[in-house]
Length: 342
Ligand SMILES: NC(=O)c1ccc[n+]([C@@H]2O[C@H](COP(=O)([O-])OP(=O)(O)OC[C@H]3O[C@@H](n4cnc5c(N)ncnc54)[C@H](OP(=O)(O)O)[C@@H]3O)[C@@H](O)[C@H]2O)c1
Image 1 (cartoon, rainbow, N blue to C red):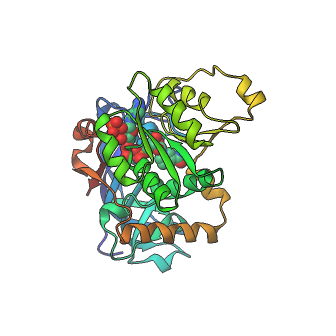
Image 2: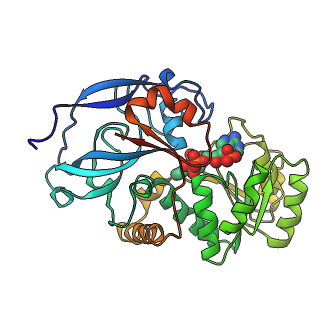
């Protein structure tokens, strides 16, 4: 403990609780939501570890969270950021086994956008040496969600639909789907994304800005009969896609990238076609999946990153001290993750 400082630099939340709004994971100026602070070094309690952050990723959930529209309330003055990787530099009672290890973590005590982070030992995954910090800092939230949701898709046939397929999670699901012999039908909003996604494993790629996209989808749906729609956009076009899906289709909303609220137009389909709308949240999956099953999924995730079947695309490396001034600009590049460095 002697080489640890008494204080640390952190990017903290400037609001408490929920905003009551849903304006989407878009920010114009990070200083509307975040501030710089020098905070006392957090202490690891029983079952917890103190991690020296090496890299932290910026996910849409982080932006929803600082804006007060995520599934848990903000705490004013606490560091922001859910996910990253770093070295365990102190361990509370019962967590000594992680001391000195490089781990991927989800922050559950103090946020990841800080020089040091406290979290539960259970929220840490020791990283193999052949995993880069970039992959390590994006090792939990999207990869586990991809594994869990493709599992939902394969329980219901071989074709499935996914929206925002250019997202990191969308790309993970396309290639995983292909590797499992499934047929991902990808929705994107940029025509230049079509070929790269086909190369990654999509059976078909539709551009949502095409005027006849619903007709194109209806033709593919009739042929491939997808029964699961993994949807991160959740807007009116999503509703139209769902309405064009066959009997017993499931619309699994797991993200709200669009601020547009959808309107249901085909209530009869719930009655006569057995269709359903549901949600997916990784936090819920972690609470309901037995630890042994989670360990198997974690091992498969690391194997996929280590042998190159999966990789994390990075758009920007953003130093912690430039987050408040530079985050909004960095989010304009959507072709990869923003990685925060100490
Ligand atoms: N429920 C859960 O447990 C869970 C877990 C992990 C992630 N998620 C959700 O999964 C989604 C993807 O996360 P990620 O980290 O993979 O994202 P990401 O890599 O940051 O990518 C976001 C992508 O969304 C696209 N996008 C943004 N706004 C859009 C809109 N209004 N309509 C259509 N596409 C839009 C962008 O596409 P362009 O290339 O066209 O700009 C961008 O590629 C997010 O909604 C996130 O909240 C949910």
